Length: 149
Image (cartoon, rainbow, N blue to C red; front, side, top):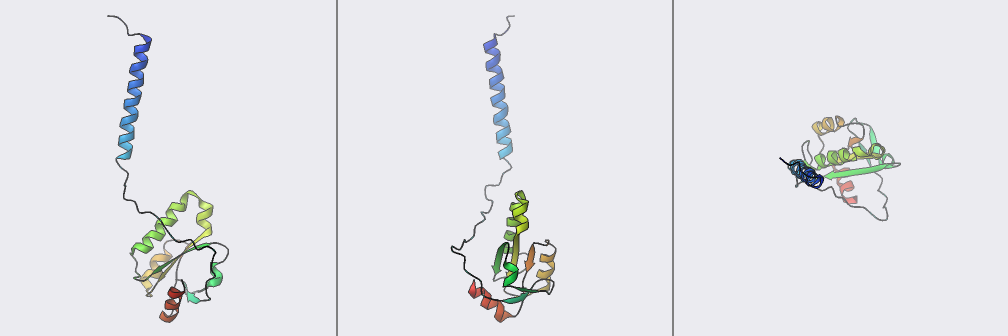
């Protein structure tokens, strides 16, 4: 039996390498989810100042416009409100996507403002970590803040 030439061996090795790459590529892409939600938002240009407000955070501490200074703040206004709302889950998703840049993740505050107050919401948000806050207060003040934003 005649041994294959060097050229034939190279063709076989190249074919096996391409076949292996193709199988690995198809196997790796089989587990991706094409329907991942897109994170989007509104960038206000130029930045507009927020009106003065005085609410409480989940610990009962006062929270006003001054706590929004010196860092990025993502404020989610949720008219439905609740522990398991798409809006709160989206806020957690944005936090998790910033995990690749820990400095940015630390400099960003995630603020959840439901229209209705709830102790369950305060408890759930306090478990998410120090960069998360939920605000609550009088309905008139919350409605004014919703209108201002």
